Length: 129
Image 1 (tube, rainbow, N blue to C red):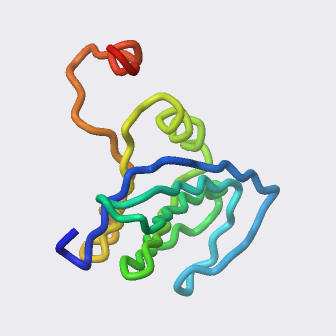
Image 2 (image 1 turned 90 degrees about the horizontal axis):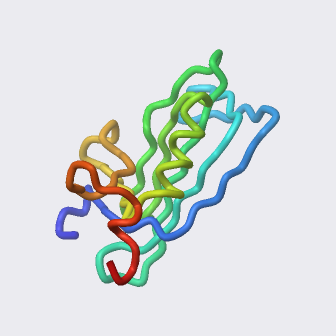
């Protein structure tokens, strides 16, 4: 991508990690981590690995600001633990899915699908359809 403050990559794999409780500091904010979903993939025609870690926090946790390092193709965002099932459901059932690392506006760092027609289901996107 031409803007070195922004990177978009297609998520090809994910890994779910559950924690009893891990306390870790991010930019001076102490986060209480219960789960992590690590999303990995490749960016636009490049063979470089990208990673976006989505941390799921306990309800009593402080919420750190998103962490973005576009130069090293890494990012982290933080959500409540109650959102983990919906997040993993999107990864399991949609494609393609993209990670957006936003060094220009870190709060816009995200995971997205593409535009889909209203009413389309999984059967509409199978190979050969």
